[in-house]
Every structure is written in structure tokens, then in C-alpha cells.
Image (cartoon, rainbow, N blue to C red; front, side):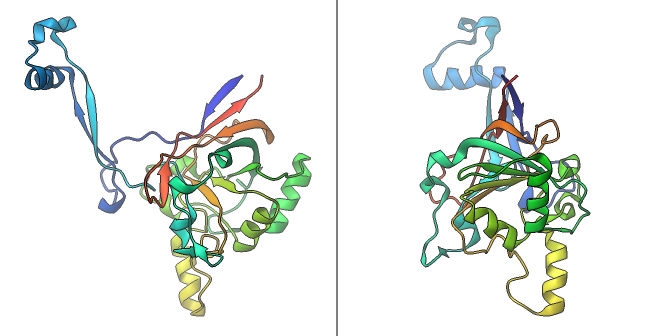
Length: 253
């Protein structure tokens, strides 16, 4: 089998990234580790190989949505279908390992909507029939912009109707290789302000459905349309609206 990594690397953010989106990591080298060991246990450095102690890192800032992550229903609203929305630690693990399906939407322009008809056409093209608990991944190709200042404004978006359609097919985990599941925020905002209507901005997120989606995937291009497994277990964060995840595809060869 071959394992394909679909996750971004958690690394310090480049200059120019807004502070509320930045990832910050402090790196503690082997000499610092030796000093820590000396302070903790009074162990002299010469008892370590090459006089080096342990290397460690401290993540000083990492939002649960700042790298490849799985969103929980709690992210969308406090209540879903009349009940308290589930947080990331409350979701069943069975959701996060299953048969993967890749739907190619890379021909869509930034700001375009992915509709039910688009999904149905793509399923016909690849010759696949969805079944409950498939993990459906949308390939937009916008992972090439990850880490760039305009990444947040790139990509098409899945409509509320398409999200609902997938949910009604038994899909509980969906994913996209773009900053967000809906259309870029600036496109949603422009339309919502123009029409002065609720339900345009963040429509698919706030579809009132207890589902999860994965955002900021990368490297979907090499995947076949189906015939692979996806593992996307999120970190178990108490009360979390999301959990960073190491998402991988497992492809039989």
C-alpha cells in the first residue's frame, strides 16, 4: 500500500500573516535540553551522548483551525437540529476512518459554487455511487496557494444544498483543499451585504446539520477518484470547535 499525506505542515507562519492566524513555535535544542535535565535531576551533560540532552518544541500559538483540521458541529452553531452541537471530543471515532472519494472541482473559478448537479455529474463521470460513511474530498487545486497572503480568498465553495445532499446520503465527513468549506469570505460578504439577507454568509457551515468537514487539505491531485481509505482523526480537545489532524490517504497498489 501507499500512504499519501494530505496534511499541511505545522510550522511558524510567514511574515505578513495576520496575528490571529499565526502559528508560533519555540524550538529548544539539545544544549537547552541538557540544561533542563541538569535543573530537573542534576544530571551533568557529560552523561549524555555527545553532551546533548533532549530536543523539544513549545507551540506558543496554534489555533485549532490554523492548519489542516476537522471542524465539529459546535464550530457552526451552539445548537444543531434543536440539540446542543457536538464538540470535537464528542464525535464518534468511526466517522474518521473510511472509504475515500475524490471529486474533481479544479475547473471551478475562485468564488464559484459547487452545486448538487456538479456533484452528481462528477459521480457519473468517475462511475461511483456514494454510500453512507464515505469520506468525500473536493479537489479544487487551491492548496498551491497555502501559506500565501491571498490563500483565504482562493477557491470555490460547497453550497448549503450540496452539503445537505451529501448529509442525506449518509456522509458525515467531507473535506476540501482550500481555506474554507463555503465560498471565500469576501465573496459571501459581498453578496450578503448586497441582498441584506441572512443565510448567504456561511450558509453551508450553518446548514443546521451535525456533520464535520476537513479544511486546508493538500496533495489531493495524486489520489484516484475512489478505491482508497482516509484516516483523519482530530486531536481530542475538550470542548473544541475543531481539532488539527494528520489526514492521510491509504491507497492499495
